[in-house]
Amino acid sequence: KAGVTQTPRYLIKTRGQQVTLSCSPISGHRSVSWYQQTPGQGLQFLFEYFSETQRNKGNFPGRFSGRQFSNSRSEMNVSTLELGDSALYLCASSPNDRQGLDTYEQYFGPGTRLTVT
Amino acid sequence: AQSVTQPDIHITVSEGASLELRCNYSYGATPYLFWYVQSPGQGLQLLLKYFSGDTLVQGIKGFEAEFKRSQSSFNLRKPSVHWSDAAEYFCAVKPGYSTLTFGKGTMLLVSP
Image (cartoon, rainbow over all chains, first blue to last red; front, side, top):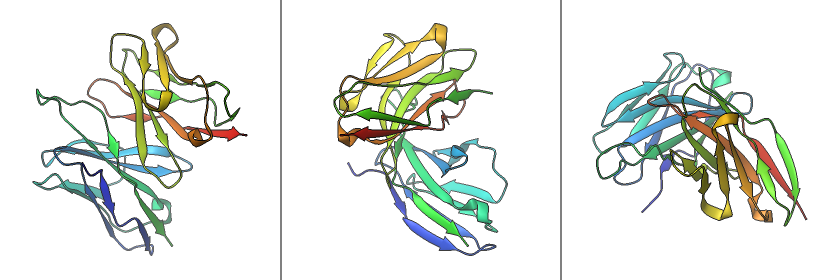
Protein backbone atom coordinates (compact mmCIF):
# COMPACT_ATOMS: atom_id res chain seq x y z
CA LYS A 1 0.00 0.00 0.00
CA ALA A 2 1.13 3.50 -0.69
CA GLY A 3 1.82 5.61 2.37
CA VAL A 4 0.33 8.92 3.35
CA THR A 5 1.08 11.54 0.75
CA GLN A 6 1.15 15.27 1.28
CA THR A 7 1.31 18.01 -1.29
CA PRO A 8 3.07 20.24 -1.77
CA ARG A 9 6.22 19.25 0.10
CA TYR A 10 7.54 22.79 0.30
CA LEU A 11 5.77 26.12 0.16
CA ILE A 12 6.82 29.73 0.55
CA LYS A 13 4.11 32.30 1.18
CA THR A 14 3.95 35.94 2.15
CA ARG A 15 2.41 37.22 5.36
CA GLY A 16 -1.31 37.87 4.86
CA GLN A 17 -1.78 35.28 2.14
CA GLN A 18 -3.68 32.05 2.56
CA VAL A 19 -2.56 28.51 1.89
CA THR A 20 -4.15 25.10 1.32
CA LEU A 21 -2.33 21.87 2.09
CA SER A 22 -3.47 18.48 0.88
CA CYS A 23 -3.25 15.01 2.39
CA SER A 24 -4.11 11.65 0.89
CA PRO A 25 -4.37 8.94 3.54
CA ILE A 26 -3.44 5.31 3.18
CA SER A 27 -6.11 3.46 1.22
CA GLY A 28 -8.86 2.28 3.55
CA HIS A 29 -8.01 4.67 6.37
CA ARG A 30 -10.92 6.93 7.23
CA SER A 31 -9.36 8.94 10.04
CA VAL A 32 -7.03 11.83 9.21
CA SER A 33 -5.27 14.07 11.71
CA TRP A 34 -3.18 17.18 11.20
CA TYR A 35 -0.28 18.40 13.33
CA GLN A 36 1.93 21.45 13.35
CA GLN A 37 5.60 20.90 14.20
CA THR A 38 7.90 23.75 15.17
CA PRO A 39 11.25 23.79 17.01
CA GLY A 40 9.80 25.83 19.86
CA GLN A 41 6.39 24.23 20.41
CA GLY A 42 7.09 20.74 19.14
CA LEU A 43 4.22 18.69 17.73
CA GLN A 44 0.82 20.24 18.27
CA PHE A 45 -2.50 18.73 17.29
CA LEU A 46 -4.58 20.76 14.87
CA PHE A 47 -7.64 18.66 14.04
CA GLU A 48 -8.91 15.18 13.32
CA TYR A 49 -11.46 14.12 10.73
CA PHE A 50 -13.36 10.88 10.42
CA SER A 51 -15.82 10.15 7.64
CA GLU A 52 -15.95 13.83 6.62
CA THR A 53 -16.70 15.02 10.16
CA GLN A 54 -14.35 16.96 12.39
CA ARG A 55 -13.99 14.80 15.47
CA ASN A 56 -11.49 16.82 17.47
CA LYS A 57 -9.91 20.23 17.26
CA GLY A 58 -6.77 21.56 18.86
CA ASN A 59 -6.17 24.94 20.40
CA PHE A 60 -5.48 26.96 17.26
CA PRO A 61 -7.12 30.17 16.05
CA GLY A 62 -9.98 30.13 13.57
CA ARG A 63 -7.56 30.99 10.76
CA PHE A 64 -6.78 27.29 10.72
CA SER A 65 -9.48 25.15 9.17
CA GLY A 66 -9.78 21.82 7.50
CA ARG A 67 -12.09 19.44 5.77
CA GLN A 68 -12.29 15.87 4.63
CA PHE A 69 -13.79 14.58 1.43
CA SER A 70 -15.81 11.44 0.78
CA ASN A 71 -12.68 9.64 -0.45
CA SER A 72 -11.01 10.44 2.91
CA ARG A 73 -8.59 12.91 1.37
CA SER A 74 -8.18 15.95 3.55
CA GLU A 75 -7.17 19.56 3.16
CA MET A 76 -6.21 22.16 5.68
CA ASN A 77 -6.34 25.87 5.08
CA VAL A 78 -4.59 28.71 6.84
CA SER A 79 -5.83 32.19 6.10
CA THR A 80 -4.10 35.49 6.78
CA LEU A 81 -0.73 33.87 7.26
CA GLU A 82 1.55 35.09 10.03
CA LEU A 83 5.29 34.63 10.38
CA GLY A 84 4.65 32.26 13.29
CA ASP A 85 2.77 29.89 11.01
CA SER A 86 6.08 28.79 9.50
CA ALA A 87 6.26 25.12 10.40
CA LEU A 88 6.22 21.55 9.20
CA TYR A 89 2.60 20.46 8.82
CA LEU A 90 2.13 16.74 9.24
CA CYS A 91 -0.83 14.66 8.25
CA ALA A 92 -1.49 11.22 9.69
CA SER A 93 -4.07 8.59 8.86
CA SER A 94 -5.34 5.89 11.12
CA PRO A 95 -7.05 2.60 10.34
CA ASN A 96 -10.02 1.04 12.02
CA ASP A 97 -10.03 -2.57 13.13
CA ARG A 98 -12.40 -5.25 11.82
CA GLN A 99 -15.07 -4.10 14.24
CA GLY A 100 -14.75 -0.55 12.92
CA LEU A 101 -13.11 0.68 16.10
CA ASP A 102 -10.19 3.09 16.23
CA THR A 103 -6.78 1.47 16.43
CA TYR A 104 -5.16 4.79 17.43
CA GLU A 105 -2.12 3.89 15.33
CA GLN A 106 -1.18 6.89 13.26
CA TYR A 107 0.77 6.69 10.03
CA PHE A 108 2.41 9.95 9.13
CA GLY A 109 3.16 11.55 5.81
CA PRO A 110 6.45 13.36 5.10
CA GLY A 111 4.90 16.74 5.84
CA THR A 112 4.61 20.07 4.08
CA ARG A 113 7.27 22.62 5.01
CA LEU A 114 5.59 26.04 5.03
CA THR A 115 7.72 29.15 5.19
CA VAL A 116 6.01 32.51 5.68
CA THR A 117 8.05 35.59 4.80
CA ALA B 1 -4.52 18.49 31.19
CA GLN B 2 -2.39 15.54 30.18
CA SER B 3 1.30 16.14 29.63
CA VAL B 4 4.21 14.13 28.39
CA THR B 5 7.76 14.76 29.58
CA GLN B 6 10.90 13.63 27.84
CA PRO B 7 13.59 14.93 30.18
CA ASP B 8 16.51 14.47 27.81
CA ILE B 9 16.70 16.84 24.86
CA HIS B 10 19.83 15.21 23.46
CA ILE B 11 21.48 11.87 24.14
CA THR B 12 24.73 10.61 22.67
CA VAL B 13 25.39 6.88 22.64
CA SER B 14 28.31 4.92 21.22
CA GLU B 15 27.48 2.51 18.45
CA GLY B 16 26.88 -0.93 19.95
CA ALA B 17 26.01 0.43 23.38
CA SER B 18 22.61 0.11 24.99
CA LEU B 19 20.03 2.88 24.91
CA GLU B 20 17.26 4.04 27.20
CA LEU B 21 15.07 7.05 26.43
CA ARG B 22 12.86 8.29 29.22
CA CYS B 23 9.21 9.28 29.05
CA ASN B 24 6.88 10.27 31.88
CA TYR B 25 3.25 11.23 31.57
CA SER B 26 0.77 12.99 33.74
CA TYR B 27 -2.75 11.64 33.65
CA GLY B 28 -5.15 10.06 36.13
CA ALA B 29 -5.83 6.87 34.23
CA THR B 30 -3.46 4.83 32.12
CA PRO B 31 -3.51 6.29 28.62
CA TYR B 32 -2.56 4.61 25.41
CA LEU B 33 1.22 5.02 25.01
CA PHE B 34 3.34 5.27 21.88
CA TRP B 35 6.88 5.83 20.72
CA TYR B 36 7.58 7.38 17.32
CA VAL B 37 10.83 8.08 15.49
CA GLN B 38 11.50 10.90 13.05
CA SER B 39 14.49 10.97 10.73
CA PRO B 40 15.55 14.29 9.19
CA GLY B 41 13.14 15.44 6.52
CA GLN B 42 10.76 12.59 7.23
CA GLY B 43 7.43 12.13 8.92
CA LEU B 44 7.03 10.13 12.10
CA GLN B 45 7.17 6.34 12.15
CA LEU B 46 5.45 4.30 14.84
CA LEU B 47 7.94 2.15 16.76
CA LEU B 48 5.62 0.54 19.29
CA LYS B 49 2.50 1.02 21.34
CA TYR B 50 1.02 -0.02 24.69
CA PHE B 51 -2.70 -0.31 25.28
CA SER B 52 -2.96 -2.93 28.02
CA GLY B 53 -1.61 -6.32 29.11
CA ASP B 54 2.06 -7.23 29.20
CA THR B 55 3.97 -4.18 30.37
CA LEU B 56 6.99 -4.97 28.18
CA VAL B 57 6.18 -4.35 24.54
CA GLN B 58 8.28 -5.16 21.52
CA GLY B 59 8.46 -2.90 18.52
CA ILE B 60 10.14 -2.59 15.19
CA LYS B 61 13.87 -2.16 14.60
CA GLY B 62 14.76 -4.02 17.80
CA PHE B 63 13.19 -1.51 20.16
CA GLU B 64 11.21 -2.33 23.27
CA ALA B 65 9.48 -0.27 25.93
CA GLU B 66 8.38 -0.94 29.46
CA PHE B 67 5.28 0.56 31.04
CA LYS B 68 5.58 1.21 34.78
CA ARG B 69 2.29 2.35 36.26
CA SER B 70 3.79 3.29 39.64
CA GLN B 71 6.22 5.67 37.96
CA SER B 72 3.90 6.84 35.15
CA SER B 73 6.71 6.00 32.79
CA PHE B 74 7.10 4.38 29.40
CA ASN B 75 10.82 4.19 28.67
CA LEU B 76 12.18 3.08 25.33
CA ARG B 77 15.15 0.72 25.19
CA LYS B 78 17.42 -0.94 22.69
CA PRO B 79 20.22 -3.34 23.65
CA SER B 80 22.65 -2.34 20.90
CA VAL B 81 22.40 0.91 18.99
CA HIS B 82 23.27 1.16 15.29
CA TRP B 83 24.38 4.33 13.52
CA SER B 84 21.11 4.27 11.56
CA ASP B 85 19.19 4.76 14.82
CA ALA B 86 20.31 8.39 14.98
CA ALA B 87 17.06 10.35 14.81
CA GLU B 88 14.58 12.17 17.01
CA TYR B 89 12.34 10.07 19.21
CA PHE B 90 8.92 11.13 20.44
CA CYS B 91 6.84 9.67 23.21
CA ALA B 92 3.09 10.22 22.87
CA VAL B 93 0.04 9.53 25.01
CA LYS B 94 -3.62 9.29 24.17
CA PRO B 95 -5.92 9.32 27.19
CA GLY B 96 -9.29 7.80 26.36
CA TYR B 97 -11.10 9.75 23.67
CA SER B 98 -8.77 12.72 23.92
CA THR B 99 -6.22 13.54 21.29
CA LEU B 100 -2.66 12.34 20.91
CA THR B 101 -0.21 14.47 22.90
CA PHE B 102 3.48 14.34 22.07
CA GLY B 103 6.53 14.97 24.21
CA LYS B 104 9.12 17.50 23.04
CA GLY B 105 11.34 14.76 21.69
CA THR B 106 14.82 13.39 22.39
CA MET B 107 17.50 13.70 19.73
CA LEU B 108 19.68 10.61 19.61
CA LEU B 109 23.23 10.99 18.36
CA VAL B 110 25.28 7.87 17.72
CA SER B 111 29.06 8.14 17.94
CA PRO B 112 31.37 5.68 16.19
